[in-house]
Every structure is written in C-alpha cells, then in structure tokens.
Image 1 (cartoon, rainbow, N blue to C red):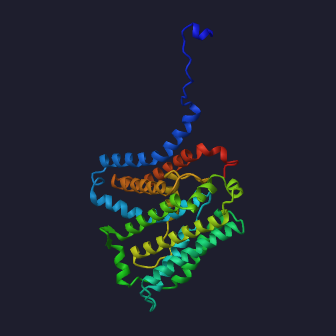
Image 2 (cartoon, rainbow, N blue to C red):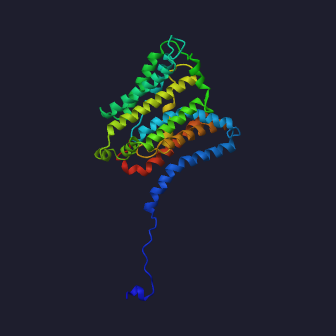
Image 3 (cartoon, rainbow, N blue to C red):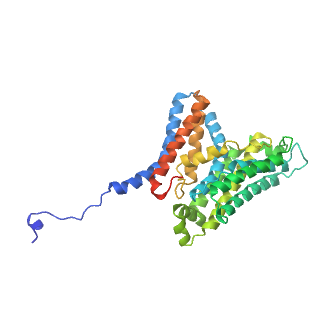
Length: 343
C-alpha cells in the first residue's frame, strides 16, 4: 500500500485549468471581434445622450446611406488586406469608372445612350484596373503599395482625359433615379452595399478562394509549399477589389449627377481606415468583411455624431485619427512577432 493510500488521500487526475498563456489568445480574439462592435454601440449611446437629433429614424437612415459607398469600397479593400497587400488605387479607379459610365450613358456632352450597358462597361474598367494591379504585383513582383499607388494616378489621368473641357451631366432618367430611388424598401445604394457585403462574406467563408485568402495572409510561404495557388488567388482578389471600386465610382457619380474627376476624393482614407478599425490585420490572415462593415459604421457614426454635437471639423479629424492609431496598435500588437521589421 502506498503512503498516499495509507494517509487516506485519493489521487485524482490533474484538472486542466486555463493558464495565462492559453487565455491571452482568447482575449485577443475576443477583443478583435467584439471590440469594434462594442465601440460602435458605445458611440451610439454617447451621441444619443449628447446630440438630440442623433437618435432619430431619419438620422439613422442618413448614416446608413452615407456608409453605403464606403462599405462597397471596403469589401474590396478587405480582400486585398487579408492577403497582406494594400490597394491604394481606389480613388483613381472610381474616377475612371465614373467618367466612363457618365459618358456612355445619356449625357450632356455627346449622343451616347447605352443605359445599363454603360454601367457594365464602367465596372469592366474597374475590373481591368484590378487585374492590372494583381498581375503587376504577382508577375512583376512589385510591392502592392507601389503598384496601386501608380494605378491610382493612372486612373486619375484617364479620368482627366475623358472629362475634357465640359462637365458631363447624367441625362438618363432611369439611372439618375437610382440616386433617390428605393428597391425592396431600401435606398438603391444601400441595396448595392448589402449585396457587396453578402457576396464578400460568401467568398471569404464559403469558397476555396476564401480559404486560400486566409491561408496566404497567415503565411504565404507555407501556403505556397502546401500547393495553394498564391499568384492566381491574389490576381483574382485584386480584380474583385477593382470591380468594387468601379461600382463605387458609378454609384458616387449617380449621386452627384455629373461626371467628376474628384468623385472618389477622400474615399481611400475612409476605406482603409475602416478596414483597420474594424479589426482586419494589416499583415493579413485575420479579420473579414463583417469587421470592415463595423469599421465603416463606426467612423461614419463618429463623424455624424460629432457634427450634430457641434464639434469643429478639426476636432472631428483629430478624433478619427486618434481612433485609427489606437486601432492599428490594438490589431497589430498581438501579431508583432510575425513582422521582422516595422514598415
């Protein structure tokens, strides 16, 4: 008989208890997932108390409509960021696609009247820009930052040439009606935004391409050794991002009612900021479209609430900048060991 048995003690298997090492990753995942949504709800509560006009149905609809086009753009940007890349060409692609659309639809400067074909052609322009970004990045092995920076200005140049000397006004009544029209009881632009979110979620969560996207962002070298078609996947993702930027350009042009080279001005900052604020990791492999949706809403609610509260534009910009810096630190800190250098 063992000494333990003689003393009347019963030996039981050691219980598995969570340690600090095992709980930290769970906490980080919880913060990255629930943190932005909690911040969004908190902002809504604060502004509902501070700004009398914030918690109204009309203001809620205004926020949703204001967020619609950034949501479309953020879906494409998210796909690129998930593989560790970045797409800076958004504003240039929007400009080129928007001018292509308005000049092919019924307008004030030429006799074209292609209707929906003008929309499809403009989307094709965005798709071509996206494919060019992907091919140059993958085949020529040029960093995505430099490639998309270049195509940003190429798109602006193309838009400037198309603009010419007279401002083209959209004269197609059926397409112009999209600006204030409703489908399924929702503003047209919101329907497009919801469709973009749904398609991106299905792509990320329900397709092999989505699985490859997260794998590439997690570890590109290992993914390549495992047989993942890294190059082809990246080209497809850049192409989808270009397509969605083109759609954003068309929708923004319809809302303006005229072709404008600066139709996408400011969109790049809001889009990439929303992706980061929403919790998608800049180095790739973590996050997704729903994170970016929350990020867009958070930034739009912040701007809307500060405006209704009477804050100056400088305070609004400062608050947005502060939130972005905090979000970058919060999302990137757990993965700092994966980055050999700070770039």
